[in-house]
Length: 336
Ligand code: ASP
Image (cartoon, rainbow, N blue to C red; front, side, top):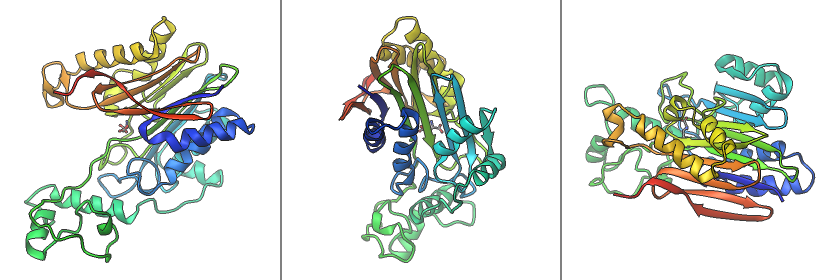
């Protein structure tokens, strides 16, 4: 039976991947096809088309795929104008001797492989960026959503669907509520195991909202946002990428599983280490307790699966054959 574990937003991806694999598609290809569904979704503000842009109002995508049997990865970082970042990463894996292409080079490679170029910024993501920009400082030339609301009756972004299209109907007039720009942490990760016990991993994201142009998170970095070792397990992370980078989180989880830990224990142990190594005060709500989240998804060589978050309240998707389930993640810190 095929087993897939993914982030909370991955149910359409795991369902399609399981179905395509049942019909004969190799599992890594099936996972990439599944991930495309989420990359195509304009309502998903953290992945692919419709992802929130960087500080300069450009969508930049990061993705990585890892093939367990070959022990080989392909990745892209800071990819602009091509929505299927995971599929480009798979081309890096299959067609090149390199592991990671970035920025302009990644785009040029994608063009050469025949990927279609387009503007990835949706009206909704543009409105979110405009609200973010206007909220940055009272001392710049941008009028904040709160000020817009008090002077014009409504702000251009109220976090309301009807307000997503410029020129669309105005939002319900509620100038007492200060609209704020959405800020996403979010990514899709899928790790999978086929009937032969071979393992595969894939992560795709638009990264941190309003990031500094050129910022790459953990998602395209082998060992941080994804790591797959056919002899031990596969793991991936979502959440604050810098922390997964500083702790080589996905690699750590796989090594712990190799040492005999269950996937859930391995994820919790890695998160505990991450929390213990978080020293900057701005990242702590109390000593030892980070104010950010990271969620780790893991599958062991024998097919055991587990997921854990830094904080209580997160979910993940488990696909076993045709069965898709959304389950609560284990956690390190209960809700205060
Ligand atoms: N890990 C991603 C990044 O830091 C974002 C996320 O998963 O929320 O780019």
